[in-house]
Length: 364
Image (cartoon, rainbow, N blue to C red; front, side, top):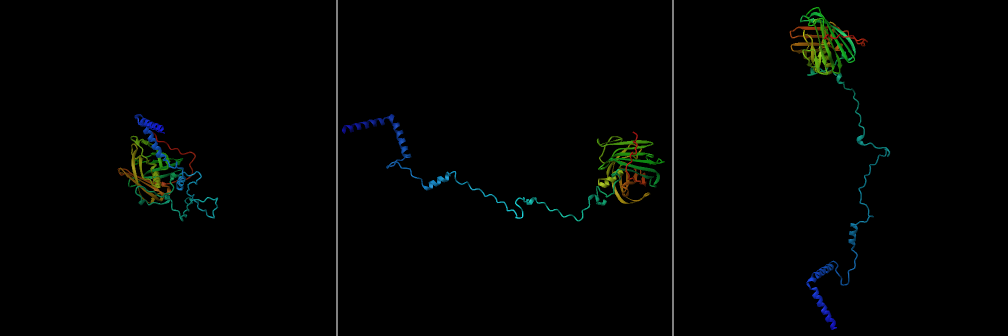
């Protein structure tokens, strides 16, 4: 036993010297650290390693809540809206119209319809810039032809100095006007003259294309070039204003302006001088409406007047004869008065003849 014990002691001493050697100290430290970590992670039991125990019931419940099985119920959804119950009187297959799309009730019919604006008479005194008069059908509103005759007076003493005839043709949206002046005296500016005007009839009224005068000592003509807004035949070519007329078309355009309520303001080509035509602005005013005593009888007429550059131009338009000019008076800057008074108004309402009467063109 002693040899064995002495050998064991010698071995332990040898191991001590080996383990405590400098080169083996690092290895020993690493082994000791590894053993200590193993003891901490896996503590031993004096009676052996602890056997696994079942987890508490609450732990299993927590695990079940955290990892629900696939067979668990789906999350609750909001209940679908229940459609409103249909009335018992309406079948299920019949769609019920929405309240906002229901047809509105129609208003009750009026007992008496209000008058149309064009049928209402507007007092002239209540108008300032423009006015509209309830007038009968205009002579140019239908196709046809006719003529009327005047007696011509001169001066304040109303000396009879001649006759004049006014003729018209309205066909296919065109108009032809002519006036012949017959006189044996030199009092009139253009005795024995033939005055012509032709052009188109538009929704706004008369639109002249040419205006001419031919007499023994004078031949003049003016052209209205609406596409270029120019007028020729004056002392020089001039800008053509939109509301331009001539001496023959003017009374017809006055009637159209009264019927539509447009302003009574026109640029006018005049011919009462022994020189080239003049182009002047005339603004008319409605003076009165009343009876007018003429050789053809007592007529209801509208009196319109314009004063421009010491010249005065008056027209009387007969309401009983489609607003034809039954009296015309011109007073020049010298105070000389030239007046035409209707003595015959044979208006024709029959159809146009097959052969239109030719209107001679003024010489160039």
